[in-house]
Image (tube, rainbow, N blue to C red):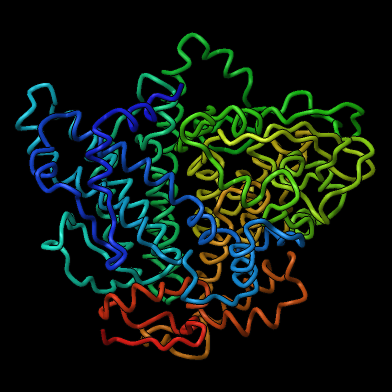
Amino acid sequence: MKRYKYYIYNVALACLMALGATSCEDFLTLYPQDRVVEENFWEDKNDLEGVRYGAYQHLAGTIEKLIVWGDIRSDAYSQNPVYHSDQDNYDTYKKIVNAQLDSTMSVYDWGSVYTTINYCNKVLSHGDEVLARDAQFTKTEWNQMHAEMTALRALNYFYLLRAFKNIPYSNDVINSDADTRPFTTTKQMDVLDIIIKDVRAVAGRGRNRYTSIADTRGLMTNTAIYALLAEMYLWRSALREGRGFSADSVLMDADSVVYYGQLSLDALALQNQQLNLGLVERARNLTDDFGSGLTNAPLLKNEGMENSYNAQQPVSVPSYTSIFRSGNSDESMFELQFDESQLKNKFVNKMWGHANGTHFASSEAAMKAALATDANFEKDSRMWYSCAKRTTDITTGNDELPEGYVLKYSNSSFQFVNGKFRSSVSSNEGHNWIFYRQTDVMLMMAEAEAIRGNFQACRNIVDAIHKRASLDQRTGFSSNSDNTKDKCIDLVMKERLLEFVGEGKRWFDLVRYAERIGGGHNDDPFEPEFKDGADGVAKMIDNFLGKGAYSRQISVLKNRIKNRYGLYCPIYYMELRANKYLFPQNPVWNREKGLPVSTEE
């Protein structure tokens, strides 16, 4: 059993629930049911750890929103054309993918993410007093927990700034009405600078590993902290480049991506060496670097998959079985722990699922556009898990959807029949949710190498990941013509599409791509020193979004998304009404189904 879920349920749970009670009147307000509980709570290490684990539990409850914000608008999916029992959400998602976002949609209520941030703030603000009270709580333990909670808080802010652009930022602890105050909006770049600085200050000070694999993969260790830093620097390089910052500043950020990416790979290798103990040599025999050129970047092999697209018997993909079905693999850097008995993962089946009635199918058109030919599509083992047709009879059954299911997180067997991946599926709601894994960091580094002008290094990384997925394990992805920054970044974007279907990342990747290009004829409405990014939006739609399920909507999407603000979510209308300091609303989505927006209450 995964250890820390028991901790969530058994350590001071009543106190945690009191600390986590929320008010619908203010998005950053946490009200304890009993003030005496709060005042007398922080006595020893157990109290601190209870709230620490509570932060992870609360994060688990926000995953569905993070998916909606970070993925479903992308080229990777099409909406299933079937009636859904969750029809209200189905109708909302339909509007979202058609670029008809509305500030009354409750999916844009960010309050739950700020609650997770408040849990982190509580731990960070009370750690020193617990250290002074509890002789069994050491300074080393507190330093490690401080690094972990600082990074977890930054991760939540990083989601918010990628989803909403300009956001309220505060590290104040909110316990009662007396602690509440209006929170102003902070510019995206300023928040990013702050959280990069915060995480850099604690980098390398977290835990390297825990006794159990579940805790090592399920809590933010050094490898996850370094991965977060690499991604934040990658985003800052894009935001700076698209706004005309100096070339040196963009290159310095790219250098940091490679630096912290390598530290993340090194920390993961050390974890695996320590956790595998006597199985190190065996682990090496199951991996290959596939010519990536990176240190400490072995990838799990797909032994026995050669030519399996002609198989007459159902097969599975060894690397994906280990990463997604078994969980906590040797490539995992941070994944939330779920199981079917206590803390279920229901949102994956709801979004991509394994039967009629799920919200989305993967876009076979987008995958084939990325892979260029049908033959490449057939030989990419990731498509078995990302574009499978579900049938009652794996060999002869009729297709249940026009495109494919995303079956990474289900218990599935596969067969390639009549030019299609077919799957017989059983449900499972106990699979973990992965935030960071090894290939994610590798592709961050590949994108950074493209920015640095190291095109061969970029291609080597992309090709290594592609070779691992190829059923002959020899097929690269790049060509000698991929010898410019733009072509190499396009190459990385295609590989990220194929690698991370159903992992909540694709829309954020497209936003970063558009932001890096920037440009536009008009000034940014709130930062007039920059252009509004319309050129980047148009190119992103042409190169990626328009090649998926929405190829017939290119002109409509360009008209609706318009500029960089259309890449981000509207602020939930109740937040605007509760806090006039949050104005202005996202100018592209400044509508509320006809309801007037008012700064007066």
